[in-house]
Image (cartoon, rainbow, N blue to C red):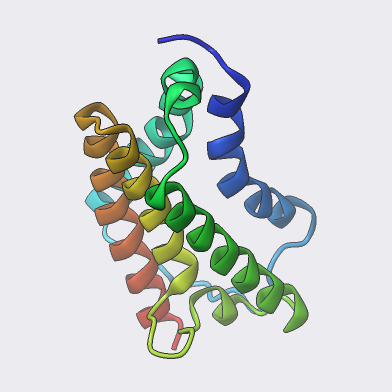
Length: 151
């Protein structure tokens, strides 16, 4: 346990494109989208812990060797960024946030989920796995619900 720059960077890489929404909000947001409350709670708990645990356990992250799991995390991040490029390229339409990527449903929800699940496996840590699973359940269900309601 301890702070390290890598512990700040890993969650920040996922968070950065989301921060752009503060200045460049999506267009055509439906007014009546309401995902199930319990899954929103799971999502928020998972988000907070997935973004803070790497910071607190930065030295553990820094000590891990780069291996196949880190490359898979990088691939998830690249695909996630490409989805963000698609969103901005398409005029920031709300529906694009949930548009499938080929056969992959809601990729902008799926790839951050995979990223944090892979982080937990890479660290071989249940402490990271539990919040990653909560985030996965909450984020997938709320995103799928929003996608379904906005069609």
